[in-house]
Amino acid sequence: MMAGVGTVLTTSQVAEVAAAGAAFGVAPGMNPRVVLAAQQAGLPFAPGVLTPSDIEQALEQDCRLLKFFPAEPAGGLPYLKNMAAPYAHLNLRFIPLGGLDAHNAEPYLADPLIAAVGGSWIAPRELVRQRQWQKIAENARHSAEAVRRIRNGTPGKQLLSGSKHL
Image 1: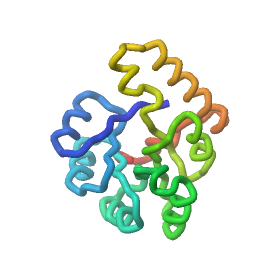
Image 2: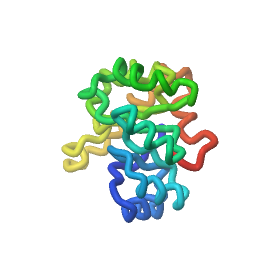
Image 3: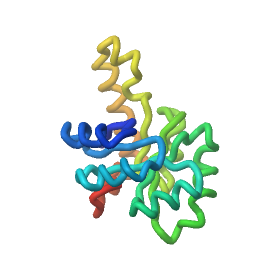
């Protein structure tokens, strides 16, 4: 399991995230300036997409791993499969966020389009505010176990494969 940083909205946030040593960053939308800053900083980065036009903008920036946001409100995995179908020959991968939790993440993880899933269910703000580190660790452990079970022991390995940005 890898931890990334989001929500990255500005070029200055890219610099902060990179300086902090984050494994990768994500954004809710496709901002070419933010993507370029991430590429220049060597920060693996997944811009957000919701439509085919968003995907095509990301492709123009040489992005092949994309954040699908907001996943569940937009129609979930069935919508993503239909939207991604015309681009199947490009081997795009997606990180769905928005509305996912421990109960609905498994179908996403089982799908070959999905590189990783994300969500706040592991460390919800209230648990962080209450400093419930043991509960957060337990949530992370359960999530990692689910990933291992679904992905047969190779959770998220494709996340950074062969690319300087996601």
